Amino acid sequence: GSLSGPPADVITPAEVAAAAGHESCLEFLASIGGAARFWADLVESPEEIQSSDYKVDLLSKPSLLNLPAKRAWLHERLEAVVGDADAAALSLVAHHDNITDGLCAQLGVDETTGGLLDGTVPRRLDVTYEGEGAGGDGLRRAWFSEVTKEMGDRDFGLFSTAGEQTLQPNPNSAAYQTDHLAHFALLGRIAGLALYHQEPLELPFSPAFLYVAFGYEIAFDDLKTFAPDVYSSLKELLAMSADELETMCLNFEVDGEEALVYEDSSKRRRAT
Image (tube, rainbow, N blue to C red; front, side):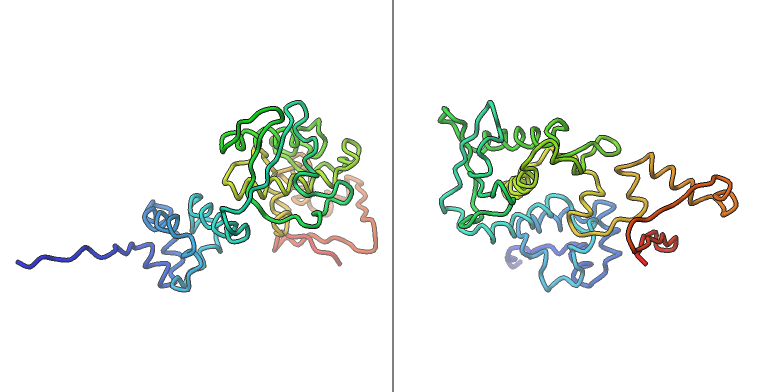
């Protein structure tokens, strides 16, 4: 018999579904574990996630990619922003006794406005502690954990507890930190660096806050994630008839010229 050449790359059913534009089929395969090989290939080549070879937009729904594939895609995009990995890193010197001391200046954040200082560019981050010579990935990981734990603490004042122990921005943060806007901007800079270095942030933000942060609209049902008692009360009111509401003698007021109307069909609020 003749010798056969090397086997061709195996095309998985999930890849076929993505290429053919069968989104529902790809979702089904993902739900039963049939997309594992496809996802593993995308982790190795994250630039393929937005390939024109796929008629399914793999970034359109969370269920179409697993977490490692999403991380690989994000890191590839951030690498393009940061550029040359061999370029000089941002060397940060931290203080054990005051982990946030001097961070605005070192990370290029204006302490008054919260804006980025002139000349601030995306760079890798190296961390050392004052008086110590050690560095490396492990120390940087420990610093990310320590600084986010400090800034997310309720006593620090930037965030308040919402719902089931999740965090949301504290509307009274200025009473805790006079330069609170700079601290929020600083935390955003730290979050960006953590994403680039693929380090987790120990900040359990409420889903509603994340929706707003990423530009999504908030629906009525999202209220239960940060104000469950208010949500339950309003849910009961919505279920009442007009006669029942009238017997409760409640007054509803809206400040300003616009009125907010709740549309039951879309579960959204709109201004009129």
